[in-house]
Image 1 (cartoon, helix red, strand yellow):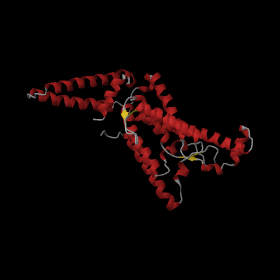
Image 2 (image 1 turned 180 degrees about the horizontal axis):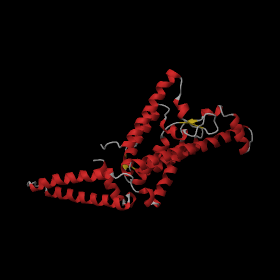
Image 3 (image 1 turned 90 degrees about the vertical axis):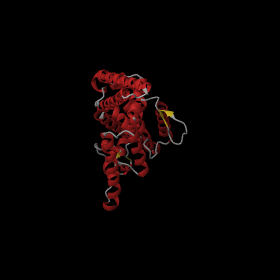
Image 4 (image 1 turned 135 degrees about the horizontal axis):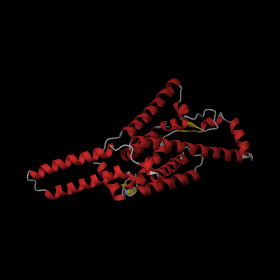
Length: 301
């Protein structure tokens, strides 16, 4: 199993510590950290702009944080190793904020249609009513890292679309691209059928939408920001292959009969070296699907 990269590891630690602090402080002091750092509806009296960032580090319960942290570990570790820490963190925060913005918009229209159903109101009049109900609207609070994590799922699917994965309870492996499309469909129809649900389906979709357009922007402007921000992962991979090459070369000169095996290893190393050189010259997105798959397979060894 590969080592958890630095940013992903720190995000896991921060989320867990914030959750434990929330659980410990609430019964002892009565202070609800989810109320302070969760994302309130922007017409509510407790809304603060900083909550667009802090809400993604807060969680509502054990099931919520365990599932989110598992997905952050599973997809975040791979995406960070490919992109590098700085670019990965920017993408994660950017998409998390975008998910929060989408949730705010969704909540505004949900409240508007609820008020309009009771008494016909114009959009301007409804804003005045919401202002009067600002204290009651504090109950509309969003917490969780799901927006950023769904964006990581999208990034993984776009980088490794044909990578097969097992999803419980489905007994057969599913390609990443179909898993992404399935997730989009589920969240979209869930948002339509359950507009008042406690699950922020539109925030999940919002994270993926912001992630998609950011990745598309990076791909269309490779000279600006789409080159990997950290080549340490690729350098380590090359060093590992160099070390293996020296070991196999020594075995050959010692009369090792497995010449074909060693020859295949040498050819494999040369192919990896060529891919790494291509990344340094032209960026990760210049790789073909087969080259990306080979790097992904080697990152797991």
